[in-house]
Image 1 (cartoon, helix red, strand yellow):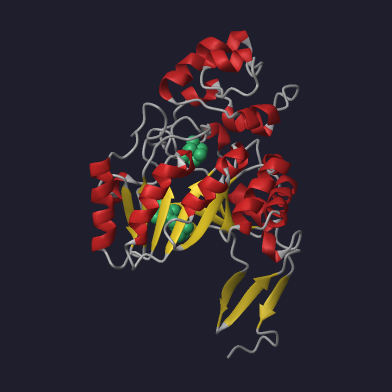
Image 2 (cartoon, rainbow, N blue to C red):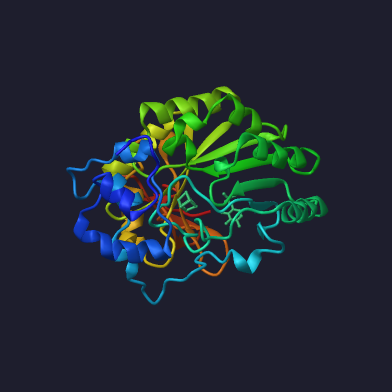
Length: 353
Ligand SMILES: *Cc1c(COP(=O)(O)O)cnc(C)c1O
Ligand code: SF4
């Protein structure tokens, strides 16, 4: 098979040697519910000799996706409850999501919007819907930041992106434009001069949140793509999901965060996996997650520390769910734990205030 061709079906996966013929039947069932796509860069990165390869686990479908547990739901983070017009999610006063497109270059098997993305998903906003979305942003002067997500906004052509961003340029209360994307990592050559010019077409301050979950994803090509963005004056932050069998290990997570910092990407969020249908094989408990995250403190630089986040089901927004290092012991005193687990009284003389 031509390694330069994207993989988009169970047949393609079989031809690429990424699944066995015996798995095809059950995976067709998965494919009928959830989209499949791997870019050539990602397909090349998979170690076919490793049955537990952390890259394969993120992108190659698994029969375990057919198991839906009672707590899972189609809209795990409550997008619908906060969507005033098509394509806009307005949950926090000062910022909105603009979901112009519901297509991605790869389909993550743990995706929190898996019921909305893909060829059978919500599609791309048409001109009228986009106009309505911009009218909404224009009418709400409290909107300081617009976050382009989806789907992956960087699958749009530079020309389409530029059209969207030129509209934002005319709205003076919007100061920040943020993109959430996997493209710099999964299709690095797409980050070229034309795309970068389009990303900057709003004239606003631009942030790109780069999604990656395993240090091997930050290949030399991916790092070069991120360098092109940073060199163009775009700020990069990271976004990862804590996933069983991918990065649920302090060693791997530390390597990932260091790889981000070495690439001039400031670690931002580490998401606890959402309750998306057919994803229970990726979920660890929050207590397990807290232990892994706490182990990063002290082990790696403060620059490398992400915030461990839960998107509260039902649309209540994000919460910092990292273990707290401090607890009140009464009379204005606290007990604070250091990175080795030692406990200390604060203030140190124990006298309170
Ligand atoms: C996650 C999210 C944001 C962005 O949250 P930050 O904490 O600013 O990164 C904004 N709006 C919605 C609806 C979200 O789900
Ligand atoms: S890139 Fe994001 S939206 Fe697309 S499949 Fe992965 S997690 Fe879902």
